[in-house]
Every structure is written in C-alpha cells, then in structure tokens.
Length: 367
Ligand code: PMP
Image (cartoon, rainbow, N blue to C red; front, side, top):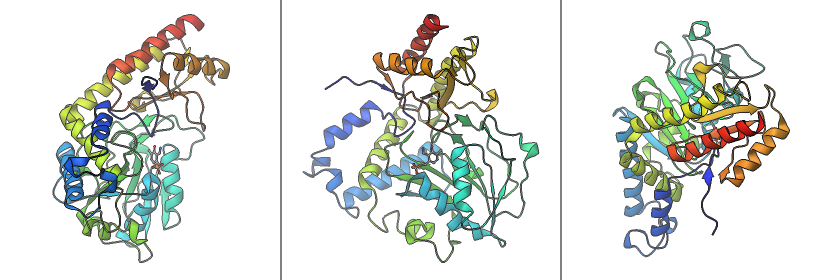
C-alpha cells in the first residue's frame, strides 16, 4: 500500500488516523458481536448505544441546551436546503424568509427555498463573492419566519467571525464546513445543520440541531423524511438510519473530546490558517487572495498564483509539485479555479506546516 499522503480536500476530507484505525480494528467484529456495525440493525441495543453516545458527546462538546433536539439524517447539506423552508417557512404568517447570500452554498439554499415561500435577499447581489457586507447595511425583515446564513462558504473561503444579530427572528445556519472548529453559543440559533464529511465524519450523514419551539410547523406536503417532528419523535430512526456513518461520526466526536474539544480546535485552526495566510501576505503578490481579510476562512484558504487572475500554467505546476511531496487535493473548486487548502480539524499543525514549507520553496523558485 502507498503510504498515506497529506489530504487538503474540501470534502469528503481527511479523517483522524486514530478514527480510521479504530474503525479498521472493529470492522469485522464490533464490540464482540461477531459482526460489523454495517450489519447491525438500526433498532438493536448496540446501535442505540452508538447513536445515543454520539448525541450526548455532541451535546457535551457544544454545550447544547436542553430545549434543543438533535437528529442525524441522510440527504446531505442539500437535503437541509429543502428541509429548512419545508419546516420553517410557515413559522410566521406570510411565509417569508431572509437569506444572507455570501457564496455559492447560501445562494443554492436560497434558490431551493424560493420553491416554498417568498425569499428576501438581505445583502445586494454581487458578481464575485469576496466579502461579507457590514451588518449595518443588511435589509432584515422583522416579520421573516427565519434568517438563513452559511457560516463558512467552502468554495470561496469566506467565513463569518461573528454570529449575526437577528433581533429575535430564528437564525438558521449551514455549518457544514466549520462545525466544531470553535466553540459557539447554540442558544443564539434556531436551527444549525452540518454535513459530516468535512469536520465531523464521513459523507452520508447530516447533523441537525433544532430549537424545540421550531418543531411542528412543517408544511402539509413535507416529505416524511424531512419532517423534523417525525424525525425527532423517532430519535432519528423513523426509517433506517445511516448507521455506519453515524458510527464514524461518533468516533470523530470521541476523538474531539480526547483532543481538547472545540476550544482546542479553534486554537489550532488559528495557528494553521495564520501560517498559510502569512505566506500569502508576505509573497509580494505572488500568492494572491482577493478576499476581505475580515472574512477569510480558517477552514478553506483560497488563493491564486502568479497574478490576480491566476497564472494557470503556474498553478498547474504548483499542484503537480505539491503532489510529488505528498500534498494532495489542493485544486480550487472548478467554479472559481486557483488553489484551495482545506485545514479542517483532522489536519495537524505539522501537516499544515508541510504545505507552508512547500509554498515557501515554490515562491523562491518561481517568483
Ligand atoms: N453547504 C456547504 C457549506 C458545503 O460545503 C456543501 C458541500 N460541499 C453543502 C452545503 C452541500 O452538501 P452536500 O453535498 O452534503 O449536499
């Protein structure tokens, strides 16, 4: 087997090696049962223990108040783009929702929500996403059923460094790409969701945290699979849950607890992202980030090489030389090109420093 490389993928992304080793060890014979978790009924006592432990670890890691419910669902982040309006659009009469569109993922969520109600775009439409407009300019509707935003736009590398103030209107957040990378006050939110495949597990399960009073307002036409009331009422096993994905998620949550939790992840993410941004900022424009510094993501560092628009030949060379050093999946999203280094929780400071050293060497050779 080729030795493991350093994976900067935006998702599905690197998992902690300890988690993979534990899953490997338990693959054929989980907990002395003589079968794999994949072969275990979602209603068995052993699986119930896996899912309840995952929930209580999540509650502990995020300090989730008692009036919030947790579900683990299929359908990905994209499934929640539909589930959110289906469950919440009619929370208030009028059926309107505010959307903060600051990148591709919030834009996609707004397009989906338009099928189910009236959408108010809180910030002006832009041709390129490079900043988050100041909250003083936001056009929030006090009658909206909810305010929606994406706390980390994975493609552009734009991250909110604060929780938006909505003056009592329920706040909904897509935290798919920065979940558990820092502590935050859950009580400021109505609903939080995150696909697991970046910071908390593998693809196939999405975690949703919902304030109790927001449950039970779903439209009559809501598919049963997306109805929060039904899913909460059945502890995520109304139908067959994505059992193995929940097991891996549980192992990652355990790993997070063993490694200092969200507080430690915040500290490490600051060290990792600063090291990469410092190289960019001190490269005399050789590496170029178009983003406003106040919203640079700690999770997905995006940049161009050679000039502001990016010298594609040089970027190609960067990617192939990086790969020779065992640094993989650094190619930017096809929608915007360039380079993207994803520095999620499972990526260690040492692994990030291998990229930093490579960037330094590449700069010296080609500037
Ligand atoms: N939201 C964000 C922030 C994402 O990065 C992604 C996927 N990369 C999605 C939503 C969509 O998630 P999924 O592919 O699981 O539907």
